[in-house]
Length: 305
Image 1 (cartoon, rainbow, N blue to C red):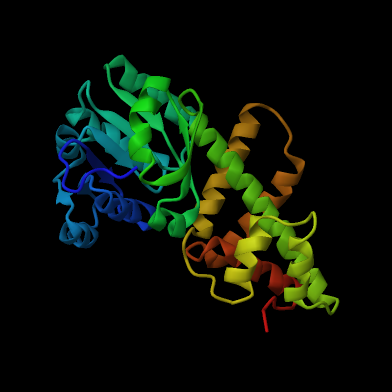
Image 2 (cartoon, rainbow, N blue to C red):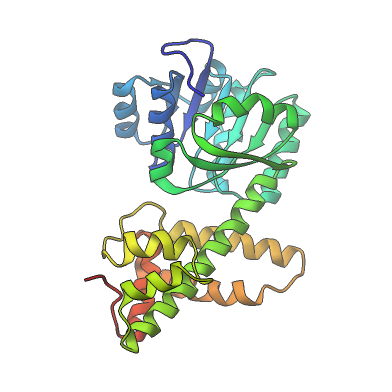
């Protein structure tokens, strides 16, 4: 969907102008949405104001002016402060406001925040995304939404400006639940593929030919089809989604399993590898840097010709 250029009928405010939030601002501006922004980093704010966004002085001020409010923040603690703190969103929201919480967050906290807002006659949905910065730029993200059907239906046209695959997966917290589980699978697949590739290289196999076989066979995955050719073999490891963030998401998934008192044998083993790689000071690197950690253990390098 593309809204009419300059149309005043659609107004969305975005809080959090980092790798993902900033690209969402640009995307919505390109789609003709009137966008308000707030971030503690004023250099980022100025950058997007120059593109056509409107600066707001606080979350409350943003909520008063923009009926759709998108939060794209590093963690749930910042979300809570942004919502409930001094000059927070709750001071500016009204019955027409819809909070679209896009942070990868803790589902149980999302449910608490939803209940708190509901008591005050306010509305929210959780709508985390998958696809990284490239898909945020071209508006082809996958977006998984938890919340009331009526709120999902209202938000869907706006979300379609940002994503190619929009899913309503259940009640409040369901979006954040499936996001953590999806990332748990992604992390485990990347680590397992990394170990197999490293062992193959150590045994004398060509990594490019290995990927040709894997991607034509049952071992293929997003990691083998995209991350290895574009990040690992090229040795680029360009920062999009950091190792810090992946470990945070894995902690959320492991905590959910602990709350439910269920074992996660394979995912737990993968989590230990990710935590150890993270402990080596790679947190601010792209999450694919976990492959560098595996390479060091094998004393090899997985690179293309």
